[in-house]
Length: 323
Image 1: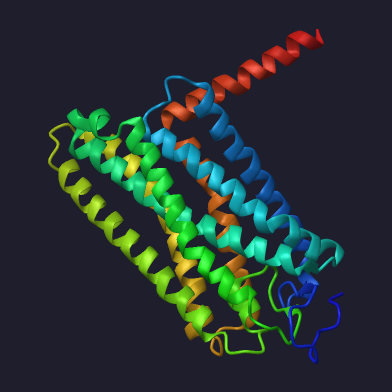
Image 2: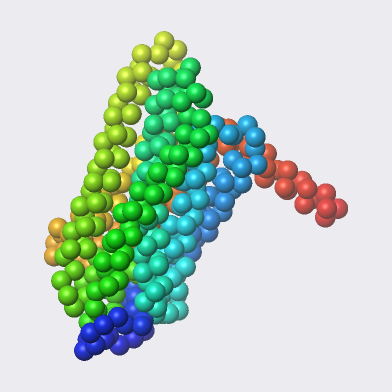
């Protein structure tokens, strides 16, 4: 059960209490089971993707490098929120310390900012591979890939650090967070002072980051489609479209619920029920990490073959030891 709110205390409460999904208390057990299953799939799938790419010397192309980083970010993003969500839904352990709450918020929002940058990097990788294949390895050198990854990470930290600082230095008049994790807007509503500066900062910079990334991703895929339909070989066309389709599916899974969650929290607070807003924000953080390795594992032949080889070798090794 959530603890008492600090309605008469102005300052920083030592503990926040996560209320889960208000109005859906009767479904908490099913939510806990569903989230646990999805989290297990996300951990297993992304760990296998990382292991296969790191262990196989033939998977050292830029596309696999970015995919490996994406899998690592997915693990961080899911691990930042799902264990606490499951605890809230299964055992009612809703308390989270002030520092832990803002640490969780920092990692969640920084990871989402890194992920959108990685999706842009992967779109650029596909553009170079399909539109400039002869220059692919010369353009995307290891130094360039490392520079892109570092730039993406720095951009996320530069965005998130001021936001976290602004919100954590506000005085709070309540401690019951109407959410299942320390989501920025939900925590900001508990502040005694006007949280509008931090909320506007979040909205504006999220829109700038996502808007610019989506614009460049759309431009990349427009050029890719032009190049693909100009190929004479139908087999080459199908192969290129198949690869791009898996990337487009991942991006749709990430951007559509993510942007819906942000703008519903701002524009549709009264029109959209609170439990719908919370579920949308929750699923936005767990569905992409769960489905990304499945999509890439199934759609990418090289990863599928290496993964099957890894699993069969482990199975036969264990069978040999057992006999």
